[in-house]
Amino acid sequence: MKSGIIAFHLYGSDLKNMDLAYPTLINDIFPKFLNGFFLAVLLGAVFSSFNSLLNSAATMFTYDIYKVIFNKKANDKQMIRVSQWFGVVLSLVTFFISPLLIYAPDGLWTVIREFTGFLIYPSSQ
Image (cartoon, rainbow, N blue to C red):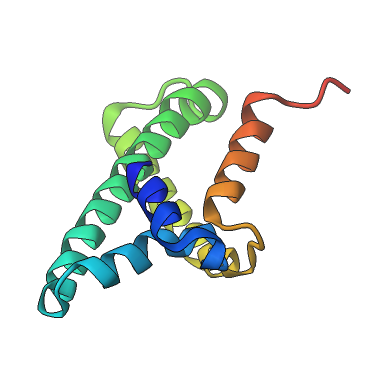
């Protein structure tokens, strides 16, 4: 959040997309020889977050949907196998959907906010 405020004060409305604030700030502030190191650290954080979300989603699916609806007598070994398969399927879905985010006109943050709002505040119809 603070980096977005700093980027706004440095660049104003010159940035075409708010998703470019952080990369532009890093590119201008960090020495060029540290860009690769910073990218490795950033990707490590992204992959770690993705992995934890993937594991959480697979666990919730297995306990809340698979065991309740499909197989009430599933043992631990079966549930682990279902969780692994669900994780693979979910990661493949995200792999194919993620390139479409480039077409988000207002940036990734807006897409995340709209999607979260859709889940949290469903229509009353």
